[in-house]
Length: 287
Ligand code: NDP
Image (cartoon, rainbow, N blue to C red):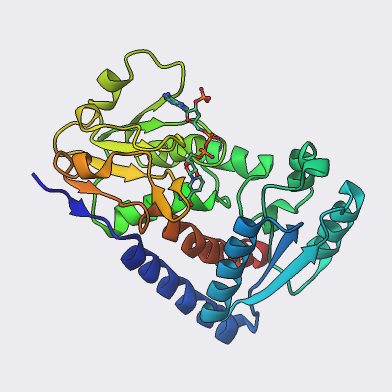
């Protein structure tokens, strides 16, 4: 069997087009231009690339984008004040603080993120949004797992009643993915570094999500023949070589569908951010 390749580029284009249409509708019907503010503190080169991509996507879709650049030596108080200012800004509907923060304020990341008004929290990290996701209320959901779910839907992959296994239990990917899949009536198991007999568990999965951060960790023998494999991992193994958490070349012979790295889930994250900005506007204005 050779798996169908789930191309992030195609799905991201579909998600962005749907966001663009919603932006247009919000502008025409309600005279509101959705606005996103991205705060970047310091000069982390990878963060600068991510922020540029977010800005570019906003421009393509007609979303107002404000990039707030703050110096490396920004204090926690200065950053909190900036968030307060953006929380109060009428033309900004989504706020995100690009992580990681510089070492001097890194320990305060939680307090800083929690200062964002939950209705503007387009990263979906605020405890209020986490709670809503768990209880099944409308919420802003972290972009990467939300993008994975959207992709499964767009690819026509059935979720209800399926056995799903997630490797990884981070707040950003694994845990929200659990709640998203469970809310769609999958039977979900979450594995982590202390899971015993990991491959026995993963081999039960109809849908296997890998969010570990270890290059090519998931080998072909860990995959049930015909499973759908979603590889969230992004691992740099050489200056210009990225690989996922799944051994793609081997897995592609066992799975029925698989996301590549690069060119897979990574592209969905920014697309879902655009959807989250639209969702934030709708939640704020109850439209
Ligand atoms: P974290 O480091 O926060 O979490 C990794 C998880 O993997 C942990 O729960 C850990 O278990 C588990 N794990 C580690 N080793 C093993 C093992 N040997 N067996 C089973 N489980 C293990 O990572 P993230 O969730 O933030 O990210 C995961 C990957 O996804 C990374 O490669 C990251 O770069 C990528 N990523 C990609 C995004 C995208 O846009 N595509 C966005 C976000 C992340 P434990 O909890 O026990 O330590």
